[in-house]
Length: 196
Image (cartoon, rainbow, N blue to C red; front, side, top):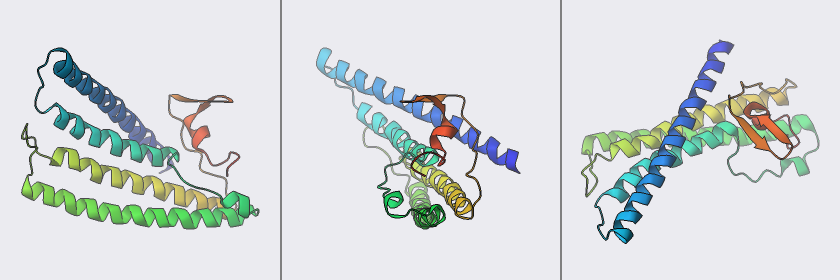
């Protein structure tokens, strides 16, 4: 079971990184093409903004899910300054993680309904007539991924509150450069560090 979870964790990470890289490159290329056509050749091409927007949906929402995976999303965590007891600190963090997990579950419900409506209405983009469901599906995928990552974070904090060691999530192949040197992603993500 543990190896299945670790395989899923690594596989999802690879897919997300691939989507983020491809969509980032596509958005840059689309914007450069539009700028070149409009300002250099004086030939604006209809629909480039639509494509960039649709690709941008996937870039932003998969990026948001990846922030949840890496626990690098923006948060104002001041609990460690007020709570000195390590167990109490992790119980407080567990409450926060539980709240965020519930909100991600609500987001899944909303995005599922939106996705179903999008399939029924088959709304299309104005210029290229591309079905908007292709972009809007990123909301549902992102919500599911965030729920999964927030659930893992919740379980990790509850384990630590009970005195267990933090999850030792598998490292990604790529390393994250930090001020103190190169650190693998699981070490950078692991709540074992100073802020935990």
